[in-house]
Amino acid sequence: MLQLTELGNRLKEARLEKGLSLDDLQEATKIQKRYLVGIEEGNYSAMPGKFYVRAFIKQYAEAVGLEPEAVFEEFNNEIPSILSEDIPGQLSRVQTRKSISENGSKVLDLLPKILIGVLVIGVFVFIWYLAQKYSGNDGEETAPKESKQEITYEESADLSTDSNENQENQSNKKENAEDTQQENDKNKEEEKDKPVQPSQELKVVEAKGDQSIYELTNTEKFELKVVSTGETWVNIKNNKGYSFFQGMLKKGETESQILDMSQETEVVIVAGNSTATEIFINDQKLEYAVAPAEVVRQDIIIRYVKNNQ
Image (cartoon, rainbow, N blue to C red; front, side):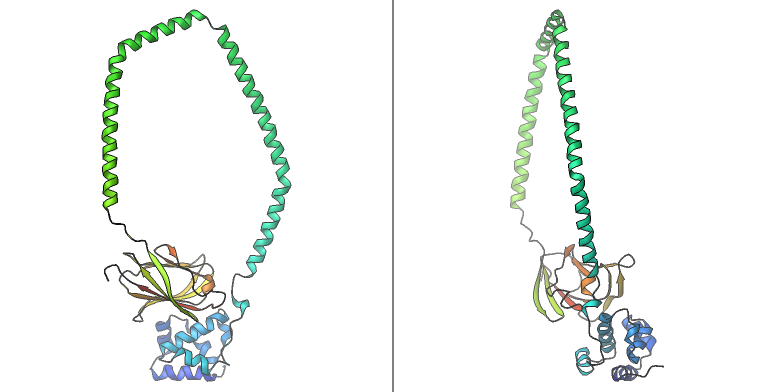
């Protein structure tokens, strides 16, 4: 059995002082029991990645009543640092650029053949058009002139008998058009009188370290959607500490959470891996105030200011 580290021993003592078992702590933090044991024994190799170590230690400390920042400062030597190689998604960019360049060269090789094919088809279409045009003119020259005169006579007779009906129809159409125009003008006036509703606004109020504060205004609802583009640990809670969701989000499995936060005034989203976490507010994508590549683990605080406040 591994020996407890100074950090693991400090956390375990705080847990026992609270009268909590590992099962109780697992239920409170939603962190698997084997990861909690790994933290107490200093066995960080059992974690899914180095960038989860700090997130899990912070959750453990909060659950047993310790200040996370003080724990990090005191036991900094025991906690593994987060390296850039732990951030997923870096390698795939190089492979994608390579595949794009290869596909582009293939298209350039095929372009002359495509142009020649289009030119040949155009020549055939032009020849067919000329043939149809001249064959149509020959048919008109051989048509008997007497038949044309008879058709003209019959059409003029029909027009004289239906002239009254046409005048009446035109009068009705004119009246309907005037009514429609009046209705449209009335609708436009009503739309001008309606007050213009301001569009939703999501702005950054403060950004410092791993914490960013946003303010949401000019909206009647607050729908929160958190999506994982890879693998990330997420905790969604209100300003009273109540957690609506806490756990891992994986692309292709449980990759998103959609929650109605319209009754809350402040919501905190803890993103363990912000490089693989996308946040949407009423379908508007939140832009990170601090680049995820610079700070992987981030706390996003959204203050909802309702219209009637």
